[in-house]
Length: 448
View 1 (tube, rainbow, N blue to C red):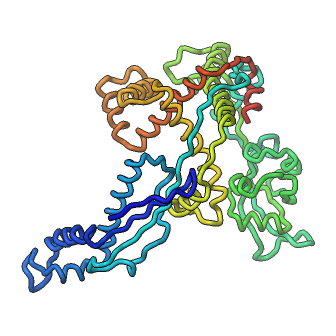
View 2 (spheres, rainbow, N blue to C red):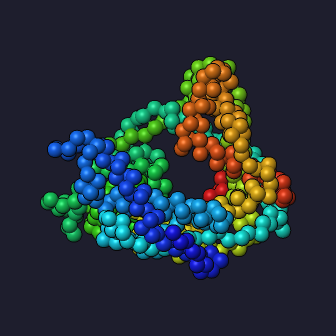
View 3 (cartoon, helix red, strand yellow):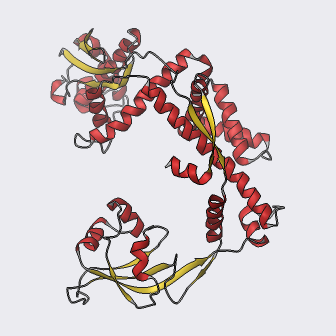
């Protein structure tokens, strides 16, 4: 066996592996012997089928399987021994079909693999300018909107006689001709028009004051929204949306409904906060809502500032990547990614890869950011207590934590959350953060 490396540049290299028959012949034979033990062939006792016949039955697939395993092991050993920091996974430079292999294992085999390499990074966490972290104050307008949302959720459904503000209109959409008559066998569909989903007052203006069976011309000219958004708003298929935009349409009102906002009384408060709440007055309820909203927006403010921090720190680093290799890799390994759409998909991968490389450098430079098993267990335990309450028994809590840690997907989610906390703790210890007070309404607008 012969393994050689051909370095293309700082970010790309190729590894060639030459296999002589002696490198894989005996291993294929061992696999055939194992396979022979399971073969049940008339005329032969179990395990006594001639190896030549077994070889024909197994076919060249067993040769490919054995050779592939050898290549993986040798390639991994080579990468570890030479301390190659690879991105993605090695890719065959040339696909080898069944015809390339020899069922009798008498052929010399050559393989070449492309590898993308991680660049060297000179870590720099200092920033020229301070980063702002906002302290949120709940202004009256923001609180009122939040309360209205709660009152709407717990309100009563009524059916007004005419269309009024915030009414949901359900009716029949029909294709009409130039004379305003409904086209026989033309496009028709029952449709709900919800002002909360389609926030375009101009669109609803012609419907105001209309009654059941009133007819209104239907047009999307006043709606400045993308097709994907319109499909969700109207719960409509792509071809139906095209028909609405291309044909002359009218809408016949069939039902008018509206949610009347619930009054803020003791019954409403118990619905929102639970039967056990001791809050009974509107004043105390609003104070409680302010506190909850401050806590909720504090998390948003933290992530807003961390987004800005990440942007600024990334701006300190020029991180070249083996772009051509990574694009080829995601086309080869990810479903629904093709040569046609790889460019748009690659942008996200490129950004996450660069950030991942920086995280690795931070962990090397700052050992306190590394996560041990006991750290993750303690973090999951604290999160479980916070989410499920202190009343959760210790034994039940331990069962939940064990379940999470043994579940690969859930365990990874908690790992990356903790990693995120530790990485930003490190970065924030190296920079200046300025605190600024802002109203909730202004912050929500800013955070868009």
